Length: 136
Image (cartoon, rainbow, N blue to C red; front, side, top):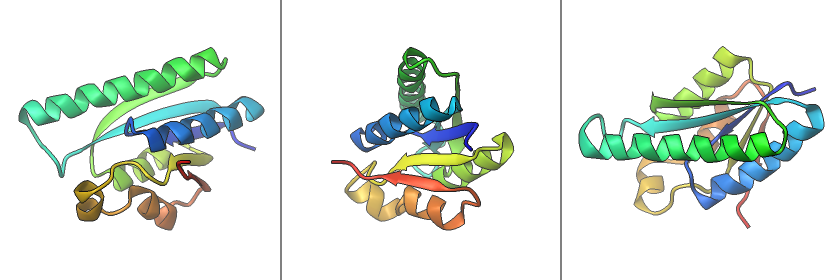
């Protein structure tokens, strides 16, 4: 049923909950896991902040890759720059993703207020199923 599962991550505790669910589903279907981090260019386009976000992204997808590999899964990692909901949907279309698994609560506070809910926008526009995992 699912051969390619996308797990977008921002490195937050909410994303970790989604990672656990996504990896479990991937094991059941022997699916390839796609770990995606989007460096939000609305926050920074250059300089030290951009570099910091890129490092954060590499760590987030590396952590997901380690967890997936330990679970016996094939994991593809990608760090891209852009607007998160758009990049998630574009990656999904380009890679033939069957399911997107993501947290409902990532960034909080003013970041969420200004940028809106990434998960909400993905759900609204995704042509494939989206499993939203709420943080406990």
